[in-house]
Length: 244
Image 1: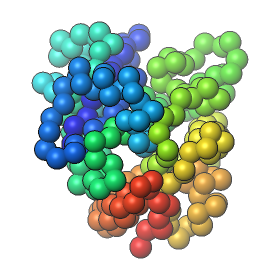
Image 2: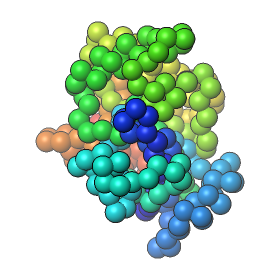
Image 3: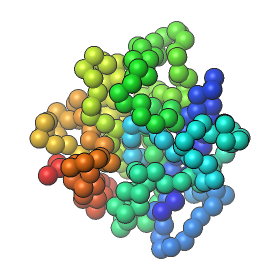
């Protein structure tokens, strides 16, 4: 598997604006030019979308220890091949049959390329931003680079798998509404919706409340989540799965 992405920066904040993973037919490797060719035929080549929380990822040759700009990265709005993060490590082992030769788009609730933003004061700023999003008020973070206009979101492929998180503070009402609206819009656009849920809510409650378990976890949930994710992607399109 390979992963590619584009990065942008605004007021010293770095964002990932596009990301795809490629599931190879066999052991072939593609370059960015071949990626662009596949994207020119996205109706045939993009299988679907995986929605995650936020990225912490870097192009090959760079790292996530410091900002990309401080490492000399030039923001040219071009695709770069990326180093694997923990999500990509799981995807590489879990997504195979039925997806070979296809791209899967990776989207995030928040595109800011920064580690450990949950929970932090940044979420208070996100919640305030989302309250202003539909107005002409200025937002703290770039409204186009960090957030999705859910009513006009572009989704390619047959499915959207939501692994965007489940531990939203109840007082972050705008963030919860934002995640819920993205899921509702994906369904409205006719996409097959998939996610993982647990004993806290049933499948319908999870979808209505945007309670979507992230595929990568730590501690006692690490293997449980990974195995559930593999089970979800054992079929095409992926399935709604209850974790054990």
